[in-house]
Image (cartoon, rainbow, N blue to C red; front, top):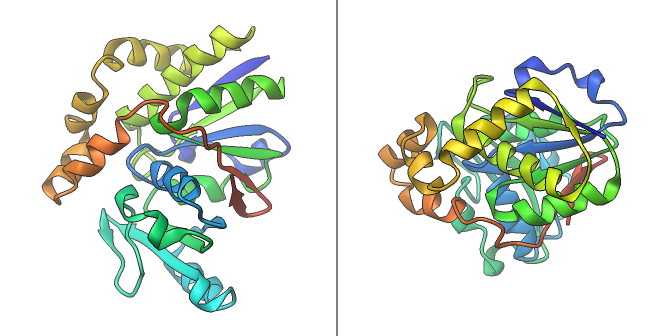
Length: 237
């Protein structure tokens, strides 16, 4: 089995991902928010690649049982029910609801994997559960870091490196050069995840916009057993 890592979705052709097992990581904050929403009882999460499409499909769903969530440059989109802070996705808000979500980076990366056999939604929150699920598939794995505007992001790649290390402890995997690089980043930054994120480009932007609590929340490792899976354009737990 082999693990390959993509530093950003901009380097990936969506047809290359056809029938593959894929992992998407957007620690700050899309995949952390999706994991939280599913863990707090959301019926499903529907990631979309544009604000216009989010508004269009939300009108065709379940009326009051549908929530629009999303951000542009960290700020909640006007007219949406929620932003992209995982702390907003409480049981009282999302239980039994369909959540349509658009984010600047994460949901675009997820939508790009729509031809995959299955796509796993991963963050620090569900790291161990994701590794165990993936190891049990017995498949080659493609990891996509959502990054920022198709550029490299430190926090996503550190998370990927920790995931790869866990997978290697659970099975026999060969790894690509990019996966090896992510392991080096994980070894260097994995001991202080919160500090690493606070000093990353995206983390600094979130701090400037008042989201310090989100960084703290997203830095918790393996606290969720939820493994959201994206198949047929819908995420289910």
